[in-house]
Length: 123
Image (cartoon, rainbow, N blue to C red; front, side, top):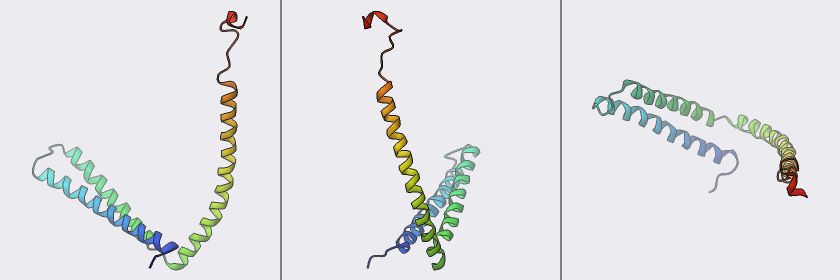
């Protein structure tokens, strides 16, 4: 049976956050292991890798908590996202027209020859 709607997104986010938790733990364990066996002697490098692993682990835990919202929260999020997508569609359409205008202006004025640069070329 195929999941649809918010359930599939929720499952994908939960699994992605679990993978991030594993990567964060792997960073911490490998950095500590390499320091323990003396493979890397710089405490600054080891400390940086452990800090990155801890930060990734913390963000993954917060993401895992956030990815498992209640049913009413999911309904509210879908309602607000549809409103936001309507607004963003109009903004995107406006900027696409400005890009078309920019391309037209570039094609029109970019390759013009300046008669002051070489007056004999225009005679």
